[in-house]
Image (tube, rainbow, N blue to C red; front, side, top):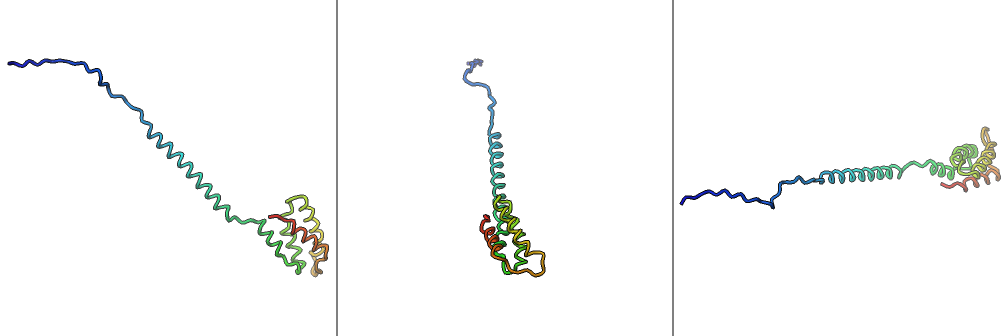
Length: 136
């Protein structure tokens, strides 16, 4: 029996050719990395600003402490220090400005002389008024 080779071609309809699939996972990964980097940089910047300003030197607080601790028994020295440190708070309001100018006028007679007497009651009243109205 001789075998005859039959060449039967059967059409295959259910097998399709390869199709290229779009893969966006790399772009998603890059987006997540970029957004994450921006968030980390923002948090780092905010942390830096917090640490920088947390212990910042506050000139107003220092001058307030010095104004409150001035020894009024040393009249000439106290007059100069009151004028110097009081200037920091002068522009807080119009009332501060008026009171500071009044205080400087009262203190003028205790400056620029070799020997001065103690503060009179009016000068002490103005000094205490100015010290009391300062807010830090």
